[in-house]
Amino acid sequence: MKKTSTFGLRLDQMQNLFSLGTAEPDPMDEEGDNEKMAGLLREQLTCALPEHSLLFDALVMMMEQQGYDTQPLAGRPLGQVLSGPGSDIGLLRAIKECSKTLSCTLDSEVEMVLATTIYYAALAGALVHHDEKITQSSYDKLDESFALLIEKKWMAQELAELFSQAQRICRNRRNDP
Image (cartoon, rainbow, N blue to C red; front, top):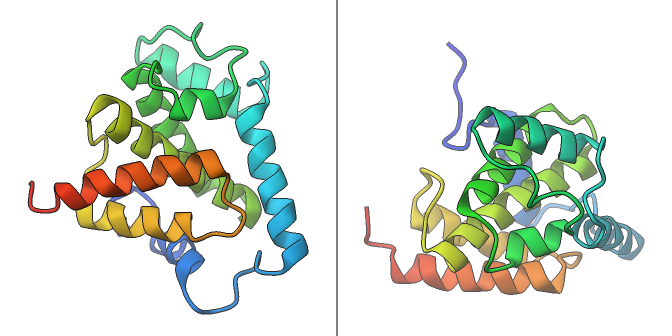
């Protein structure tokens, strides 16, 4: 039987995720790499989700399977969907599941890191704007993950702020089941 993590990721993928915050050299630690990563993340967050892109098509498919309306997703910037208070909780759940699946299947480390960042942004958006924890991870684990992401030099300011708000919620609820 294949062991899985609480996120549904393989152990090697979890190791890659948590290596983002270790003292070992980060593959995106060079200044040029940080700028490149920041640019790629900004592009993901500010561009309207185009039809027939991998992320859009995967989200639409997952949402339709779950009975959600895909209209609110088309043409909206992903950053707005993730951090906006008006985003439907079902949409955030679909983004969470889709980005988790993508992070497990992508070959590019950069794309995997982007998908993982979007995964956590969906979790943070649900906590901050809907007061819902849409993962089985503990508040302690979420707090740690948000802290690791906030520290990234390439992190978009809007996501860093969202992660910081979610981190405060996690700290307030650490003793909750």
